[in-house]
Length: 435
Image (tube, rainbow, N blue to C red):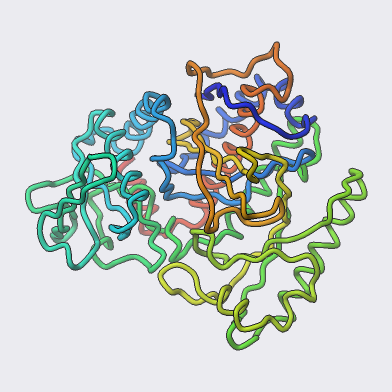
């Protein structure tokens, strides 16, 4: 399920795209083999950066919150993929409880919840929305900008099951990334399938663990195509004990930055890249573009001023940052509407179901675009197509999106490995008992 897009893209032709196009059959066979060995997360989204010489994921979200940014044309793809996912994870599912974030004032996020609920209903599921908010004590209707409405209801917990007052679901779909940890109401649910599993939440998940898994996947994939894995893999380092407020761990951070910049410089010389190398320092757990800074030299992370320390010290839900990942910065050559842009690819189960551009005209090609000033432009799709265009140029729209879809699915394989390797023993035994 790799759709064709009509949106005209900019940026230099990638030899990487030519390699993907030439080897498309082998790639699909290889990926199909991976899905025989591993179970993908229920859904995910991957932020990509296209540097012209390199196409790499920079973030993988296991609780994607932008389904409202996908064009309506891709909904049939999303519905079919949802059916496939449900059949594997909970084949007898009839009722599904959807638990969103607590962002009842974020109108864009609420539109995402409505779109997600609609996809589930089209897949033949009865869907109700349960809220973790303590002040939702009865049915609460929220009006959306498009005239639709959402009904939030208080959760009802029994010993081993979670539902609503008059609704007993077979499965629970989380659209809440558990940044504040796992609430007690979600613990010890031994009779229901939770999608994604609780250990996918940011209370325990780490970006560095994901990219370590991705490094393994990229290496194997590169061997398949006879290419350098660096062309699809952002290198990284980790500093595990840091306190920005107390200026603790600066030496560790500076050493990791210096080491990674040195590795990038050597690769730039090898490939004749004239751009200036940089790294992204980001909180090892968390989302929403918080706790991120662009760094060109190790000296920049020593002696941060108060504003910089405050920016890096706390992420979503007010959690303090004590672990950071230092990730190779990937310049973006993509521009849309005169703004710097990066593609975001959405997947349900193992299928690409759509995507959009994150655009931020106030940011540079070396900066995090998930920041104030960003907006989104859905990728416009033609009729669904499961193959690239072999007669087209490597950077023709269908083929460029095919390349994005390939790299996004590599990140999806890595997410599968990551979740398997971090699965708690009790969850593993429950999964085996369900077959």
